[in-house]
Amino acid sequence: MNKLKSERGMTLVELLCGVAVLLLLITSLLTVGVRFAVKTYRTSMASAQAQTLCSTLTTAITDKLRYCGNVSASGDRIFIKDVGSVSGDEESGGVFKIEDDEVLLGSRKLLGSKAYPEGLWVDELKLAYAEESRTFSVSFVVTDSGGKELAKSDFQVQKINLNQS
Image (tube, rainbow, N blue to C red):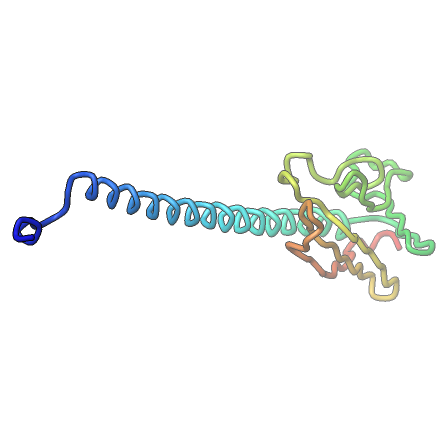
């Protein structure tokens, strides 16, 4: 009995087991922390990319509508002549629409495919025109692959081209 009481400390096996348990605990905490950090980073990047896409589309649509020619509305479709045409062809123009999750003006893409980050697209593009004030009202939503709304734009553009009605 005296011999057992006189021994102090831990054996080498006990010390190794304690260190192994401590390392497992630290590793599991680090794994959870890294997963949370990666998820937060991806969410933050998607939100920033959606805001950039929203701003780019707002600028592109505003530039096209501000200097457009004749506007004719039929139902919910608005045909706009001379929208950014260089040739000056009177029949050039188009309708803003969404196709393959990208905004098109007539049959041409408004922005290149690289402007749309992976997994983001435009949804619910709405365009209205008030003829008496020559003002366009535009709204659209940028969503992710899960359908979650990441950014929304709702703005008005006044047509300043007075040569044509």
